[in-house]
Image (cartoon, rainbow, N blue to C red; front, side, top):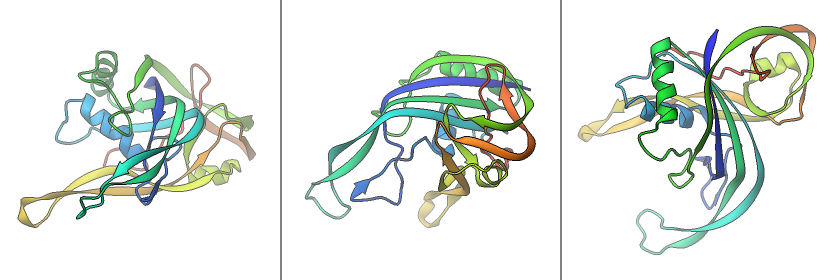
Length: 226
């Protein structure tokens, strides 16, 4: 199976957890909806995203607190809030889809139409590598993860992987409401963030997707075509 593999670097990043307010927390990796938003932009903002699956992995070097002035809606008095920033972020993304879509996405990463960012607009992305690779299924029973990853909860149970449970947004629909306005409605899916250094221990060998450079591929989208 041919997929597009992309390696990115960010000096700092905030993938904001939307339920945090006075103290802004960051997800450890960009949620699927954030990655799909980047894809949407690189493909020229089509009316509908093509059928696609994604794998999101990565590590960061540290976490630090920053302060930002915040103005609450309906008030004109700014006040400081704490924002947790990830530092020294390395991401590995895999994309599956039809050949035309993947080729357009490759060209978008290699020659982006704007300064790429993930999370906040100030969290600029450096594209380190973009290439096609082959993914095959290999039997695994016991192994150590070299990268943190979002892994579907059901698969974590089969692999005896412990992690932090997150319910994350994936695909987005645009829903018209009164007054001609449009709101975004996301599909939410349960994942676990499994840290690098975790060990998978299956009761019996399971076939898992692995690329030709030895990296696991943890597909995130339950219904990639919807």
